[in-house]
Amino acid sequence: MDQAAQIKELVLRYAKAVQTQDKAEFCGLWAENPDCTLVALASQYRGVDAIYRDFLLGRIQASYQTIKLVPESIDIRMLRGGLAITVFQYHTECVRREDGADYGIRGLETQVAVQMGGRWKLQHIHYSK
Image (cartoon, rainbow, N blue to C red; front, side, top):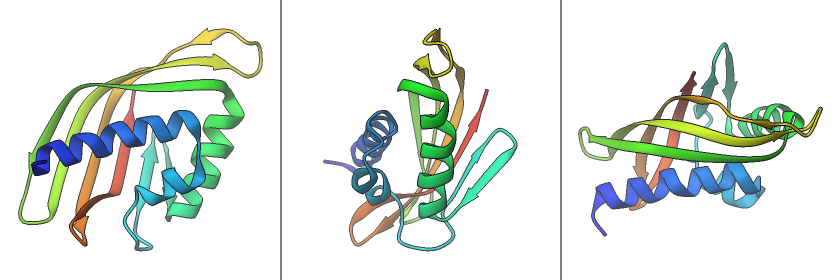
């Protein structure tokens, strides 16, 4: 599998981990360093544990009974060795926890991936709507 295909697979695995919220799968997608970050609108989460606990559980799981993140038009940009940026449109298919109503978000996501030990890992994610 070429590098672009590996990075696309990383994006798809991330989208699935957002849906399942499986801790081992979600945390295993990230680089093993304390500088991993996720930015969602006006909030920043730093470190994989905080991203999982405060963003995925504290924000996403707290707000939605179910969520499906659907990446669209994945554009992978290979930079220098071991660094890539992926930009894509996304939409979500959610059921709100407070009232059981269907809900969706559309936006743009940027992911920065680094190669570690021959595998691509997430270093940074930025969501915008």
